[in-house]
Length: 554
Image (cartoon, rainbow, N blue to C red; front, top):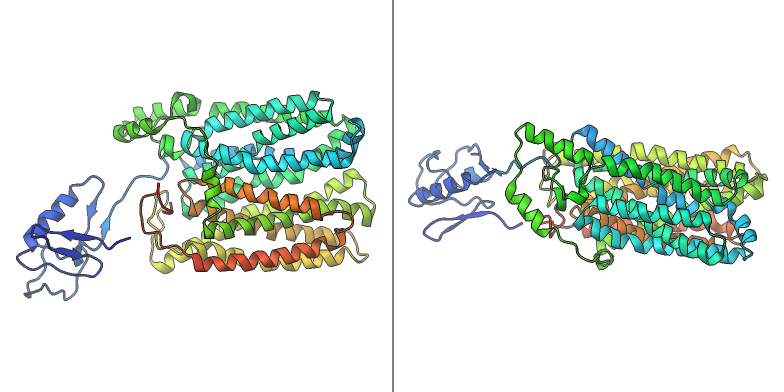
């Protein structure tokens, strides 16, 4: 940001950062300029204490009537709350968003245990059935680009409505279909509906949570994506075995409808381009019961709406066809590209270990389908622990850096951190986890080659799940930090890259390559750490304070 300066009526300019001072004859004109600045809404001019300060050209002492530019160095703009929602409301909203994001990973894996049964019932090969998984992942990478762009401009609630209507309708079709073509097309439609919920969850966090608390809340919002892969094989195995594979999709329909109804009735609109910090009433289509009650209470308390801001938001609120290129452009930013590749590789390792565990426990320990499904619990348990601890570590390191730099951490306030080393604050926690993950992957790969008790791989799966999940959760937090004005687009870019790693995993993780899968994951994890270490070279000087155009941290 350019050094602030004040120009007097004579055309002379004084650089506030360099400490220049006006002459005695120019001081009255400067004082008049200061008085005009102090009359601006929301602006406070505080006089800094000066010790042995000289006023050039004379030795007059500074006075409130004729202040020096040194005294004007600290100009504070208090601003408004980043969100008018209470802490309890924020927690409930993030919980709801996390719960809604459960369906994308759950729909991905819930019918894995029934693939052989489905191929026999539809009289097709396993290769063709695997095509339904591949195309599901392809759509999972593309669809969020459309959803995220609309969500960041039109609001979260309309996109939630779209996602759940498409998802529930696809589940009904999947439960009734009896042909391979119908299964293939409806699985793609199912993916188009469910995949956007993950980007929406992180978008909601970016709307209402500042950088000082974002680590904890982003980790909490990711619980849905963590629990989905863990619970889906268990539910799918039990339902497929005792009720038939068609009932897997009836279960998803009932479950999604049970979440969709209260979500639409009670979850408020949070998009800052629609409701600002929550003080602006949303459009009718984005309004729900809680919005109506909350704004009525605000009116009763005498909290007036900023009509100028309301008019500006209303003027800009127009439907535009979604532009997926906004997500693609994120990939061309060097810093973002490194983060996305590292996150994708981490997720690829996660899928390699998770899906490889099924074959490993079946071949090495002779477990049946149900017991193999239970083996997903350790890695899921480690991932859940990561959600509750990694975010807190990230927030703690953020506060440590603020204290080190003398920056006050103000709760629920947007802070100017344009020169704050946010990459270091986040990656100092993530980088050790990369090496810890590699160590556990080596141990896990070695254990699978020797005859040891089943307790050993279970323990290493737990700690591997913790380290892997912690590392790529922190990278997700950093992505939202870099793109605070478009958190859904940032997450959609992540989704665009992550399924690619999953598709690579589907290709590599076969019976022939299974012995090498853990070691391949180790190599990938080491490469991931190398790539992320380069991020320090891309530390940005975020100089422009306009959040619409730059990466001003919230």
